[in-house]
Length: 215
Image 1: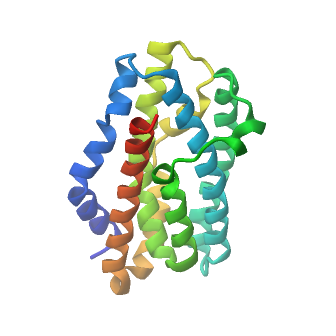
Image 2 (image 1 turned 120 degrees about the vertical axis):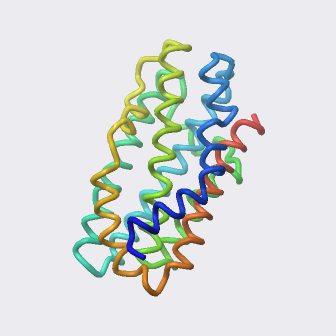
């Protein structure tokens, strides 16, 4: 099985899980204009912690890269998260949040467990397992953010939404880069790759569940 066939297979197996993310009540409430501002602020504060720590994990993945195509895959993801964190802070200011206060904000363990799992991947997984998890997760996360950002613009009138617009771009180039990495490892690690992919999607769903439920 090559990388493309593997990703098609696991995405099919995750279709119900991904549907729960993309049709999540958090997003549906936002699209209906019913999501309270506290939950929007919660999204921002939890994401600040997540992205800040994702950056460290991606940097570690980059330093562990053994081949040029692995470096080529991880480096743009780091650049993307650096930009995302800047844009997130701009939107936070529109909401009246002070960046310097973020370190005192309460963290929801279930919400930030995604970034803790990414740290585990950075430490213990190989580049193929890391790339497979990321390339399955990113488009789902991107679509969820796109819909949430559109709702914030249309239903709430927010303007500084560049954070969400970062995810409007297609992931074709990132996926092509991931396939090169995955193909090197898939013969030996397809079982653990699949486990990593399914784990990260469960953590993604936990993020949405927890910020919707616990605020």
